[in-house]
Length: 337
View 1 (cartoon, rainbow, N blue to C red):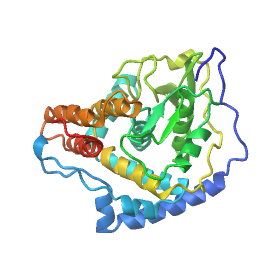
View 2 (cartoon, rainbow, N blue to C red; view 1 turned 180 degrees about the horizontal axis):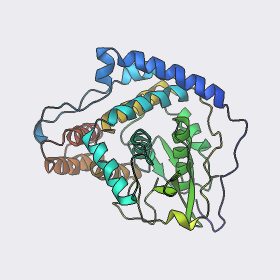
View 3 (cartoon, rainbow, N blue to C red; view 1 turned 30 degrees about the horizontal axis):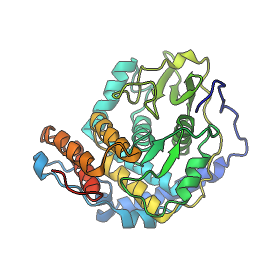
């Protein structure tokens, strides 16, 4: 978003098909539960093995792309599968550690900031942020502060690749996209914050007691440092008098998604959802460089390998995430190691 005039996105669309969404999410969730009851579906969660391994021996787990594309055909299907994956990520020690760190930093209790809601919003954040593992890329577009253009771009994606963006959008579009998915997954209170007149981030508001909490969700790192992440204090969410929940119906839950795209989105969540915020931040930085053309894929793989080799052997989820990233990038250019 550029320009000195602040644009608002607080107007609600009263025609939003809440009942349809509820029914579709329920049906999709039941289907996901049936799949999860089988041994094959358990393997699809991408859960990290309990056994330890050295960084050199860590290998990427196969992604369930074919099964994901068969199970996911609509936006509602996608949300249901991602909610199931977010629930599984709650068992990750790294995700739990990030949650407890956020509670301490914000002075909040688990009752005020429920762990399942955090796991869902964390997964969406790491996936949909600029340079995140869904390969969304920030650029100035001067479009309206909604996610319509992202969904339109996704309709044309037929062969996602690790070194190509699935959509290009500005900060307000990315923030609206995040808020839409958060709400479709059952977590409300996510709206838009304008920390400056020409920049937008998302904010997750939680009611008290003892007081309202506002968690900044930086969908880009514009005006922030390279290490700012979910819950950053780099922007003051109280600078804006009210955070209006984003309620515009940018996409219909019944909208169909290209099969290859659906498979990619699910597989990426399976690969990365259990990793620590620190490792995902470092991988995001490498991925962003590749998507923007400032870093070659092979060089990104080499840098990722050096970072992986410095990880402790017990960091299984992080080791697996790095292994997936390295394997994906090595397939896009010459070897440099």
